[in-house]
Image (cartoon, rainbow, N blue to C red; front, side, top):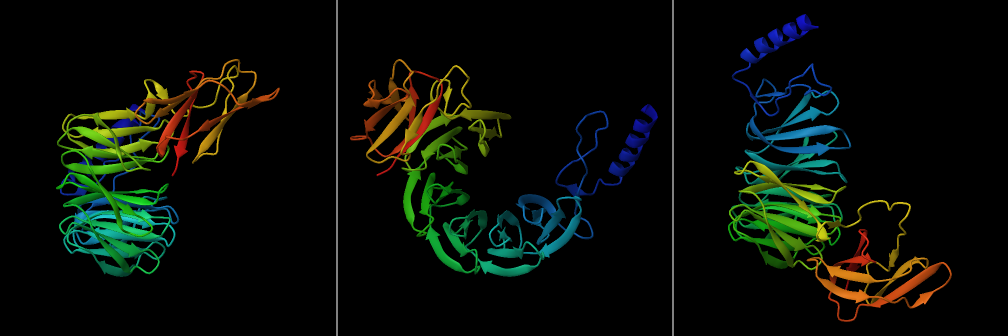
Length: 390
């Protein structure tokens, strides 16, 4: 075994010594002494690629392909997801800043910063379908699955190009703030959020009409966004304030601002634990934001234990009232209603109807503003989300 390992590392060192002039985008080295290992290295440039400084990815789930765009080389490299082999080189514009996949039409869109255009690639054939003129400095892309539109943020021209995903034609150009550099789509309310770093705000776009709904002031030099689908919140990282602005996806109002590490620059949302991870570039750490209503309580903590009885809430979303149904065996019935900041907005302690098995509590929403709320019965740790609409 020791001899085999020595032979492996001897071969590996010889390979590395001959690869000093290559730029590579993932260092993938087998580690024989671990149950897990990094599988392989894909080098660029080479005779196929001609690409350097890879900086954009997209994954095609239909054909199991990975698309890679770089700063130079004027091309997208396509990698087979099964074999990890490069299978195609597609000519594009210059300096690719973003890629996104349209699953409905199996197309990949490529934002070319220097050439001010978008290359559309057929996901099946790997051929270029067309090139679309965008604004100046196309920098970010997002696909709206509900309306099959692709949105491209143009950093230098302070606008967003909207492309029909079926016809690849430009259907709108939306003026936003200065320096638009990140986009996210809220599928629950069909809105596109565009962060503008030079004007310190977020433009909210109606995904149906492609018109601006509102502009939200955030922190200094906002740079990226993520949407929490569980609680319908948008998170915005403010690099020079070292904090994150949390936005209500229903009302587009700022819920709170959370201090994080230095120079937050990237997000990841964990849907299972309902947590947002923030990468802090300059402090070399990661902040973890737990979406909770009051200290230590998370929404939908999971299955109830055998000695606890659950309850139902309907209709949800609600407009004029909602009903809480729970087993009549529960001796006391105290329902608390919190807003997203954790403030207690209503407390009810008597059911209006019951029988031998089920009790119901009808709660009027008169005077309660539309938005997201959380319900807690008898101080149990389990909470339920309630959406109130106009």
